[in-house]
Length: 280
Image 1 (cartoon, helix red, strand yellow):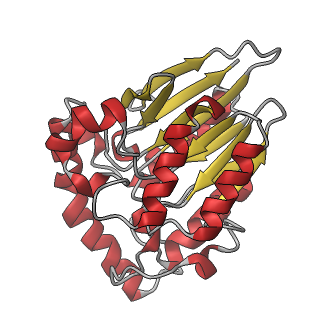
Image 2 (image 1 turned 120 degrees about the vertical axis):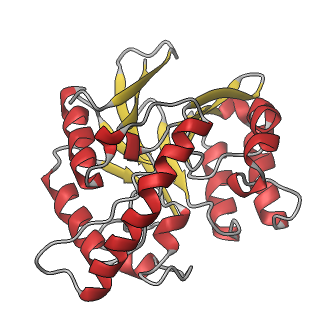
């Protein structure tokens, strides 16, 4: 589909085989069908009132492309992106948060149906919008997602040569998340970390903090001690990580967060953005 805006990242580790991933972020889906409640229908209208202009503003702020061709239902773009994952022969589809704009029953039903139709694993790291219910209230939505993501707090997928891990960093990092990361670092297997909010480290912070503000990062001064410890764990053990993949900022960036570790963001699915990642 010509509306797709594809970034490409290749990471050479000297492996004997090649691994392919397609990353999608900030899709902000709002879906309605014949089973949708009036609450879900109202949410769908609110979505269009907000995002029809907001996606253009994000694109303009980040020198990315967006025009009237993207004024279509976001599920059309999402399905085109998933189809591209098949064409790309991805080993897994990586979703780095805000795939839905709010956690409505219609959106949950849509995702469940979509994931079941894909022949590849879907690795889903939550964004801040997955924590919002139909009214926009930020709640713990883990129970509502259990049929889609067995453990939304953190996940590990073993790809033999490395592990892909996810951390939900949209709330203060928990002790269980810290212990999970510490155990993974001890394993000495290389880690590909997926999160929603970028870490405020290195060039990522230096180049973007003043431009976009603290809201878009974790590791800021007012964060909890456990959250700061999490950020420091990544920084101090950067040689254990292949890369850090994130979203949230609606912009495609590749910056060093330490001398030997890149943090890579993928822009919004609302403008057909995705990232092809090859690790070899």
